[in-house]
Length: 497
Image (tube, rainbow, N blue to C red; front, side, top):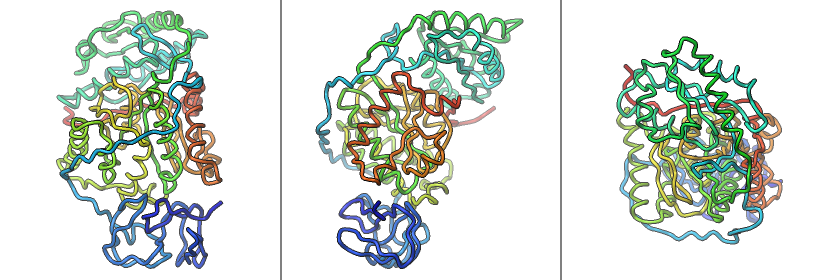
């Protein structure tokens, strides 16, 4: 295994692929670098002397400026590198035409076994979901989930209650955020049937939810207002039995991969995430898009510093303008709440070798591959077109993953260098950036991209991930599903009464 990597020819830093020691020599591009200090795995060291306030280049782009002079072979991290980013910016559209080469357009493996719904959407699970309109009925939802499992049939995969603390004492856009996310989940095709569970006196009561929901299929969606029934448990179980009977009609059938929608997310990243896991997901995204599928990239604050790469890949000026608004409006959100725009990376990111937000963003956005950006989605908006889309949501793991599900993602690909156990409302594939994490947390991690450092090519790894995702879409359970981990979180904004 090689000791370090220089990612792009323009780079003036390299990344340690294993723990390196002071006075150790590293061979890079036929040049020997004598290390001046210990370099942790995933961290950077200088390839040449860097003067004060010099741009540090990684991935071929600036990741910040030096705080002081840095010698050749010295560790480059938070003690001597600062962000070079500014606040709201003006941008120019300089479109490029990315070409995805050597991708199959219609091959025998471009299919999965999914569920065709009556509204012509496709699901990859055949589940019953219990979705509260308000946090006050969370325990009732959980009790119904537990009691209703006795009625499960072989045709129905699972019954899941999605507890959350929202829906009461919310106003304006804050309540609308809750309604949009819950509506996206109620309509999600991974749920064959849904019980919408209300209390009766909440702001976000069922009548208000129905205004946002619009027309609905009565066989697939049932509603229960707990205050209106003497025994809400008895009534809830009757409704769930009706939903199970309806859901049991569906069988898996062959579906083209062009109907698959996959969310792209990272969390607990380390210095190897932008070298292994995220490029692998980017290769997967390109391949899925090549067969007509859809991917969604989110966590807007982690686009800061790499946003022009995405902007220049926008399909047209309108998409470019929406992307500019996406970036600057999120910066304005920080400003209005008197918070620093670049309060990132997290402590875990820094421990793993990521120093500045540019460093993090340039690694993060690699999950989008090279495809054209076809559209920009508002928070809670459901994707309707094919190709790569950007979604307005924060970097928070649970909030962003829930937002991806509510926007229509059947699966979330979640890359990580540190590890995390949670599961979103849809299958959440955990992808490790390093093999050590995969071995240590095998009960959490589904797919190991650390093998890239042992000689496997990026094309091979992306192809393997593509096949794995089609298996998941066809019914293979991921670790978070096996563990019973299902989480829901909503972007909280505004006043609580």
